Length: 114
Image 1 (cartoon, rainbow, N blue to C red):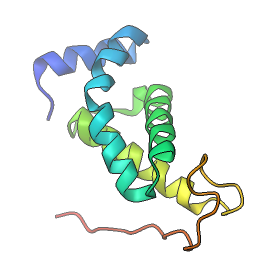
Image 2 (cartoon, one colour; image 1 turned 120 degrees about the vertical axis):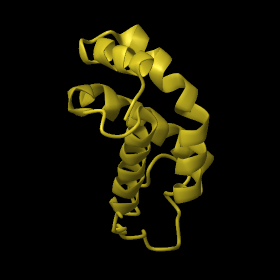
Image 3 (spheres, rainbow, N blue to C red; image 1 turned 60 degrees about the vertical axis):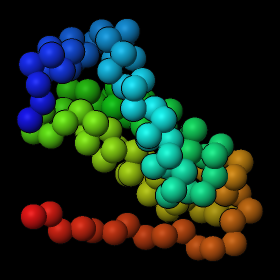
Image 4 (tube, one colour; image 1 turned 90 degrees about the horizontal axis):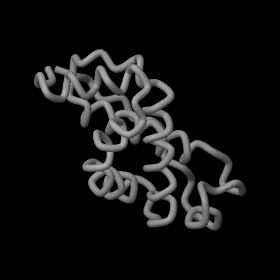
C-alpha cells in the first residue's frame, strides 16, 4: 500500500500532470537502469529501456491501482520492457549493444507469488 503523500502525487499523475510524473519517476531512474543493465548486459540498451519504461508508465498511468508501491509497479514495467526487447529478433537488436549478440534471448520466467 502506498503512503498518503505518494497517493496524492499518483492522483495528480493520473490526471495528466507531467511535471509531477517526472518528479515521481526520476528518483527511480538509476536503480531501474541497473536493473535493465543486469537483464540486457548493455549500458546503451539499459538507458533506452528505462526511457521505454517511463513512456509505458506514462501511457498506462491510469492502470496503477496502488496495491503495491509505485516503485514495484515501475520495476514490473521495466522487467517486461526488457523481456520484450530480448524477445525481438537478434538482427533488430535493442539499440546498439545487442545487435551482435551471440547468445539466444532468454525466455520469460514465471515466478510464483506467495
